[in-house]
Amino acid sequence: MRPSIREALLKNAVTLFAGRGYHAVSLRDIAKAAEANVGSLTYHFGSKANLLKEIYERHTQPMNARRRELLGEARRISNPDERLMAIIRAYIVPAFISSSESDGGGAEFTRMRAVLSAEGNPDAQAIIADAFDETSRAFIEAIAECVPGASREGLVWRSQFLLGGLYYALINPERVSRLSGGAVNGEDREAAVGQLVEASYASFRSLAADTGAAADMIKQEKTA
Image (cartoon, rainbow, N blue to C red; front, top):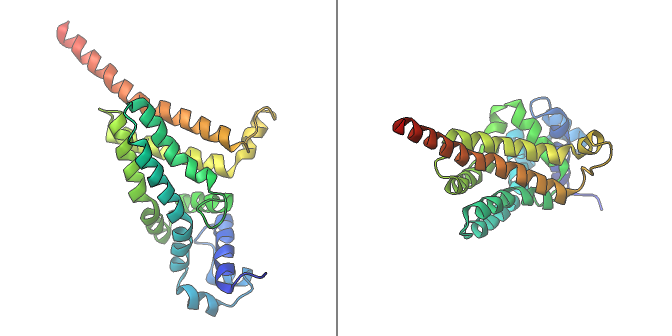
């Protein structure tokens, strides 16, 4: 069954944005790919920015809701190390288990997110911020509770590294298979989640370890 014009416009916009970025794609390009006219696009969305906003809302709202649900469960864990591991999983897992175009996942939408994040277009930046910043801050605060003494700078940078690793694991799993000579299956999502969680746990946990080492050094200097 042929999708509605509105759905066709949304779907083809994601494909074009993922392949060429936001700036290089015109309303005419999207309409042509959807076998529609530009008037249909402006009727349904008004502008390219509004179209992109709707794409983000329909893809990210279910994923963010699941992340917050899992975050709430993780924060009830008393042991800080176990809680940190669960918090990181709460961030990563929804991006992997959401695999359709309507529930927040799919490699094409993830590729589009990566391309648009790197492009730096003001419209896209504002939409991305609205879609993710509130949830991301909630995770950073939860992680901070598990690594007392960690600097805000370190927490924010390492959350950015986590996001980069998540993007790449989702959009280019074949590279893992290729670099391993086929010994590792880059398409194994369970393995990818496990590796990302372990690497990110070590990254965040070391912030507390570094703080403790610095405190010991200061203490030793005072007693010397």
